[in-house]
Image (cartoon, rainbow, N blue to C red; front, top):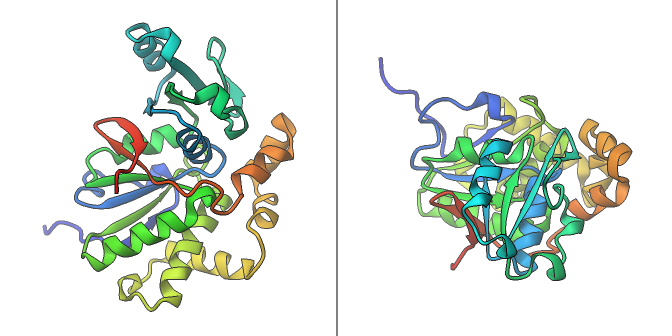
Length: 253
């Protein structure tokens, strides 16, 4: 039986959709708007030197034992709630220059760090969100013109699609469509759904749609709406986080 062929540009709506070897040789953009992507982008933009994403809490505790505690912070949550014994939760609002500047971060989250773990083996792994939308769009378009296949990997929520992640992926797809990029064809059902969601947005800011999502309503009950609004700030942090050898740093491109 021949190996399954994946399109030049594909979208994955949740981590449960990943197949073994699917991301090999591809540029992968991991998207977890609420909130891992947004926290990582903000932290690196505000001076954090690198981020160690781990899937499990005990991995974070083991890792920090072998590091200079004055130079490292632990950030993490489960189901939106800060993990006991960690320095901070998973919030971009916590990642001010005063807090994260010059520090290394160890992070574990319900969805985003799991997606990053599943992405290992890809040719290149980026962290994307509304905060660095334009930087991600330009890198994706450049990769496609270099014939590098691209996967927009939505972390979702506990194995199910998340509206906010799908919206971001749809905005990338729709922008490429408007620019006449031929790599979109043929589009999968997931791609069509994401584009339809983005086109519904029109010229409006994404926060209006995102606030209607299950995840945003959950977060608003836990930490308030300010968190959601910050995560939806378009191009507030025009940086390109890339994961190499298990750590995330700013791209040198």
